Image (cartoon, rainbow, N blue to C red; front, side, top):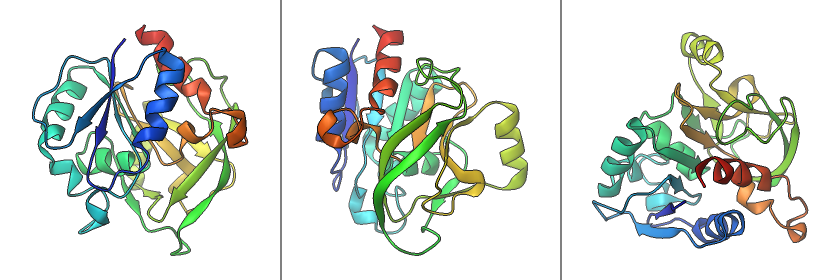
Length: 220
């Protein structure tokens, strides 16, 4: 298995997610710069958290047009697994690989704390080692994590099992407590919480490790 982590100007969680992937895969992932237009064949692409381009204009909007994203979008449409975490989720929504948009948190404040997620759909490469409704203690750290989608699209998402996780203690006002979503093919996952910061005992939780183990088990 080969994985790649895309680094944008302003990314700050690329090392965290790289270490989590290395723990699960047994080898380091590739680290790719946003300005690259081509990259080797990989099984998994991860867009990490941070503040790409300083969150100027709109979170994820500028990064969505980085040169490398054309290739990421093309590979996602061909079935390559793509995982966006926090800012990566925002970027995936801006590229329209995922439905919806991330707005300012309802309380208009940056939130950084532990939250509990409920696994809504465990029928995916990212969640198959989870139990339905399993609770995962992970971290959130964002100011624009308020997920919004119109009611018609939400109904369609529910019909296709596209809601991956819901908050048990919604920290940002997301519609229907949504914390993570899939595309219809479920090869693309976006989520606001940081599972990469819940894989070691020193993190206070190892619940995030199951997501990395799930995707690695499928792809190895």
